[in-house]
Length: 137
Picture 1 (cartoon, one colour):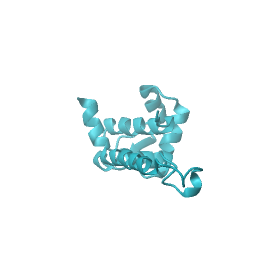
Picture 2 (cartoon, one colour; picture 1 turned 90 degrees about the vertical axis):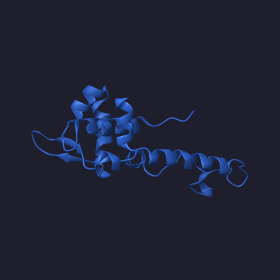
Picture 3 (cartoon, helix red, strand yellow; picture 1 turned 90 degrees about the horizontal axis):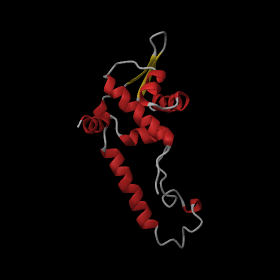
């Protein structure tokens, strides 16, 4: 069955963790890793990807760490997926005919592309703010 990568999962947890701590609050990777229960090394890599994408920012120094640099209503799960995984690539069909050995004879291209589109639409429609509301319920 379909499965998201561990790095994406770490990135999503990191963003929601930072969001629960409040806008502008700096948290360390160690703090996040300890509280969430993830590997500090892998969580650090995910947070660095979030920083490169402009979702999180780093603060240097003794009281340094990471914080969100966007409002929670402006961050979608698709933003996090793009930051962590790059361009969506659930199916090979939509990439190019060269990416699939059965592209010309495949009867499932339309369905697979529709599946990719629907999943991407769900990710784009889901904000961190909406996830926080679900967590609170």
